[in-house]
Length: 83
Image (tube, rainbow, N blue to C red; front, side, top):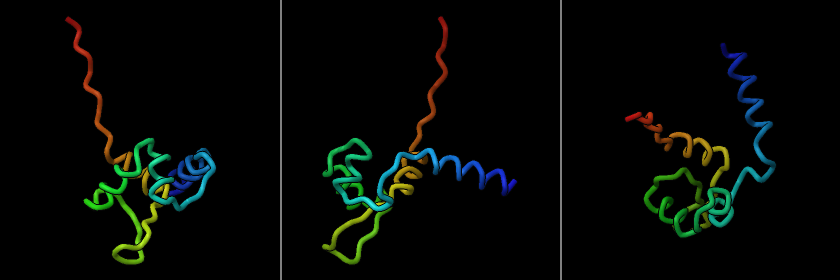
């Protein structure tokens, strides 16, 4: 089972679009297709994973963690009901 998981993760990582692992607020906003202010609000609420040297210092976000955060935010579709 662990080998299958490792292979699937390797394939997923290989299929990710090329780009930097670490993103600025502006780059993360572009990656998530939102405005930078939205990312700043998520950081301020600690609703999104981020890294920072200290208060008032520059914020960095890891692309893979943003992907995981989005996956956890998934809302399942409800099945259509036929009349």
